[in-house]
Length: 211
Image (cartoon, rainbow, N blue to C red; front, side, top):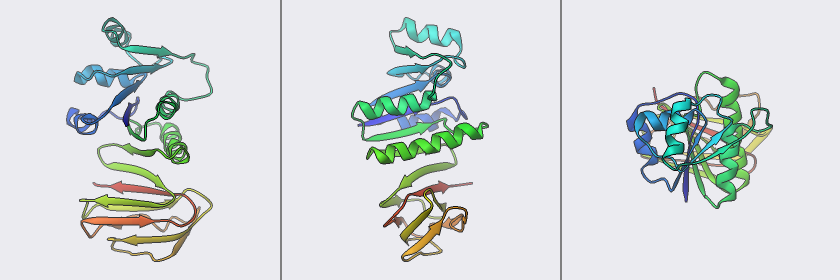
């Protein structure tokens, strides 16, 4: 099952959300993410948060229309997005797409990227997606289809990542190793209709980008 999370980061065009929510089994809006749903006419299954960023009229609208709402205190140890991630993990979802999870707040962006590791640890396919990037994480293999000409950056998320093999990239790797703090894997280019990244040991951050 696929769950989609809409957080309170950068807001994209309606078509962007349409594309990523068309096959969603469950949609969670995190606090101000409900403003996006209201703006574009989406109906979430659940709205969660401490509600410090959602428009009160928007929240009341969804309450009136019977949407499930779970409120948390402002002083809490988890971000709204983390709570949404854990909700999906606990309810048997095997794929999670995170939207509006990038933007001006770099601390939140880094926190959201760390949640990809949580998903990886729970054997859940995860991605953070905005209009220019798809951010993923792997400890085994990722295949990327139909993105010829796009940039692909590989960054170690553990101290070392070894046994890295790639196919379909301008700068190939065969049994390569990367160390945290040496980001030489930035801005490779996909040159085939299918790119493959494999890892034998460690965790690799994989970022697909387009200008």
